[in-house]
Image (cartoon, rainbow, N blue to C red; front, top):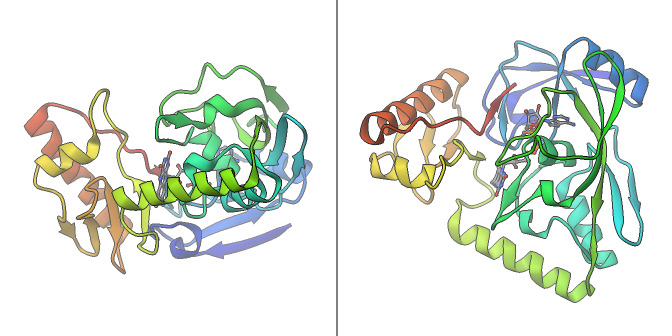
Length: 273
Ligand SMILES: Cc1cc2nc3c(=O)[nH]c(=O)nc-3n(C[C@H](O)[C@H](O)[C@H](O)COP(=O)(O)OP(=O)(O)OC[C@H]3O[C@@H](n4cnc5c(N)ncnc54)[C@H](O)[C@@H]3O)c2cc1C
């Protein structure tokens, strides 16, 4: 099994954190050993920063793709980008509403119950196979533990693969939908080439974290090389050399201002691994 020490820029889209040891298991028994050690999983790092305090497990070796008439099985390490390409090539609907999110993987999409435009991953799940921290392989077929940007993972274990419901659609229509979602995303969010982890905070019930930060005057506010985006205040941008300390400080500033002005407690969507 490969082991590498990787920088935060290699591991995450925001590029914040310390160099971290990453294990690359290639099969279930290697994965079980690592999970039993209590190491945390990392996917594309598109919603994460890395503390460097614990070793991580990359699921890159878990790339199964098995397409059937009404379902698809996807390994946890399969990138969203690859699924979208397959949707266009084979003509089916699945993750089109997530098109345009950079580097995300199937494992991360499930763990974060990723969603956009009033849809979320939970709705598509049929079965999740995961390894528990005692090394057992289990299957989940009921998804009550999933809610807005929440799932039982990685707390209950590491996702190995999952079955999703798919819907057949004409290839041209799939392409069109993906294009539409990317354009809708670009109209609201900072451009894809900037270093960001998407939404920094979860939206509080019936509210928008971006609107609250904006009302607190934090749109465009920066600390060191980290800045709340001018286009969408809930997106932190790393303009170069942002550090974990800057991240923790700017997040505290956001929380404090919103608490003082609105009495609302913001919770991080970004995970500190
Ligand atoms: C530009 C941009 C736009 C975004 N837009 C959206 C959006 O519209 N909607 C949305 O929901 N998110 C959005 N995100 C956030 C992010 O893409 C999602 O949360 C995505 O699901 C994270 O996937 P990942 O593989 O990168 O996960 P990572 O960031 O690597 O990990 C995220 C969490 O999942 C856990 N995890 C990863 N793999 C596994 C596994 N195999 N088993 C168990 N746990 C695992 C990690 O331990 C961590 O806690 C955006 C991010 C960016 C950069």
